[in-house]
Length: 67
Image (tube, rainbow, N blue to C red; front, top):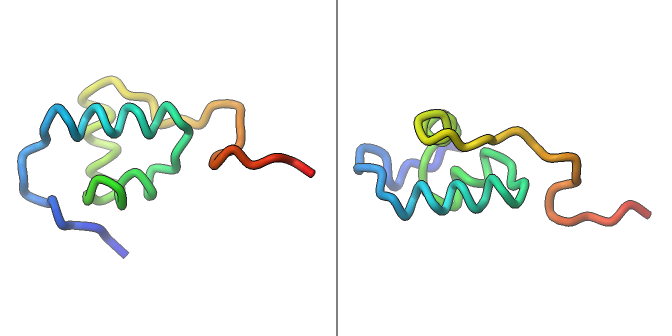
């Protein structure tokens, strides 16, 4: 399912900051897309254009505890 509520709208600084914050929290790219209303491909492009790393850090997403 593609989230496209903001497709075609200009990318604001707030959107870039939100993507940067979510990426820093190890949020999966598709989830970031859902939260900001853009497709995963759009998130990849915005991250690339703004030097934001979407690569996961060495920790589990969602702060899961191994049991």
